[in-house]
Image (cartoon, rainbow, N blue to C red; front, side, top):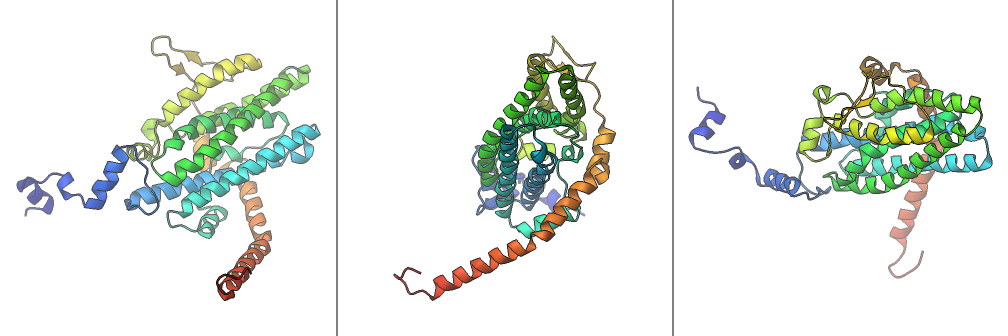
Length: 335
């Protein structure tokens, strides 16, 4: 029996001939480096991929407030406290930008939050590690936010308009966070032997998880190829990881810290850095919810969400009353 696909070949139809006008327009926009906007037609798989990626990104910003918020009351000076408070506030803002971008795809804020606090949604595994010393604030800024910049700057050119535009502001603020972390470590490395060791210990803790932030190797990353075809992503996980290591090496020399990878070296022939083996078993174990702080992070987010219910209810009631007042006010009369 001849299948419909076989019949199309007999008639001389190509795959392009079988595309709808909407599909063809979508493909043309992607090919011509133009943006897909919320009202444009898009494949359902594209929409679902964006919801997954953008919501996970938003969740990571919100959960990522916790490891650093832990040090606001214990910062070593008023200046450090003010800077750290501003940074944590920025992360909250990033989450709001990204939740708003995801909402343009048809998912609600409540749905996304329910997915997070129920444990069904993923967020960056790196935020499930503890921050035992002040030096961790420096290591997070230098390494974690540094990795975020390398990963997110290309997202400013993401094919989906609301996501790309949100990332422009996010990346500007992340660059401040990275410099703040570098400066914390630099100050510690110019201090006492104990402070230098504290800085090195923090770098040792966060170096490998920051490399894993870019995701599994390309041959083990199921979503990368399609995301790059749709121009949501612009570079592979391994390409981004290489860029990051190339950025770290000269900065580590300036700081005077040692990157904890005895196998790290530059291959003169390829111009690429050879790095040691990342512990992917640990990465996936943390991703599955079995990291040092997974349960704690989610419980705190769940508690904050529940305790903040009255604020959301009050804001919704205020908005309802304002809308009702506007509806009852005659045209031309100031309410």
